[in-house]
Image (tube, rainbow, N blue to C red; front, side):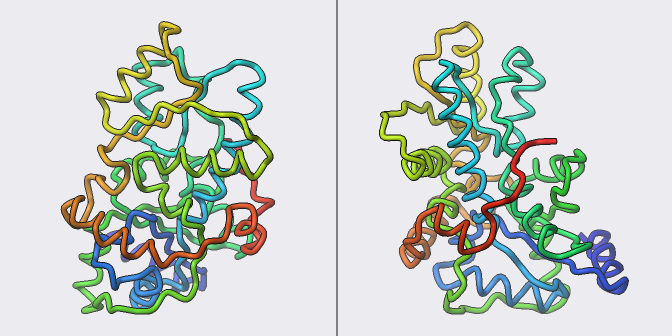
Amino acid sequence: SRGLGDVYKRQIVDGKKVVAMVAPAVEGQFGDTITMSSIRTACKKLGFNDMYEVGLGGDLTAQAEAEEWLEAAKEGKKLTTSCCPAFKLLVEKHFPELADRVSETVSPMCAVSRYIKENYEDAVTVFIGPCIGKKAESAAGEKESADYALTYGEIRAMLRAKDVKLEPEAEDNDQSTLFGKKFANAGGVTAAVIESMKELGCEDEVKVCKCDGIDACKKALTLMKFNRFQDDFMEGMACEGGCVGGPSRHRDPNMAMRDRKAALDNSTDINITENLEKQGADKIDMVRD
């Protein structure tokens, strides 16, 4: 964490806009009174120019995958989600024959990084979340994805080093919908994509196999490999419970989920299409390079 801290400090000295991007899994990790606004204030005290919710990237990913799923349904093709880097790597290494089944949509992390870089020239983007796999994703060379990735453990070390404390703060700047925020929950991606499909005019019933944990993902992928997969699509999350159960989580998932529910109950009720238009994010390129 010290090395990365030195890196972004040099970027700030060079006059670049260094922007933190916080995963939606953070809500509930530090109690029900620590909001995204709380995290934004703390990030600015650390030297970041600003902070954006990766839940906005979830909204972007949901809409793009909805369009893919609608097209695939016409062709009778079964697709998987692409937002979890560990799941994507599982397919590439152990089920290479299914590589074309993985959505071509970039992850929420990459999506919100592209959004930031579209709005701020020479911006440096730093992801913060519970996922170790995001480090590999940020280093993979995807166009305009996050320049760096930090775990909760690393950002907490920086907060301690600077004696910055997370303080309760009213949320007054929701950047993502409730669907985008719930991308961090198992089944949350499915819910968001189906919502987007409805907003695009699809009223058909869609059957999705929601897999969280490597064993569940392997089982579903094996069925897909041998043409025995019964559902229309598959949501793949490597961590049990979704991103909230990630390896760099701050709290026990059950405790975090309790506070997370309380925090999310206060979220805006705007839909995905409306939010992307409101945030000026409806024109972002969402296809993997």
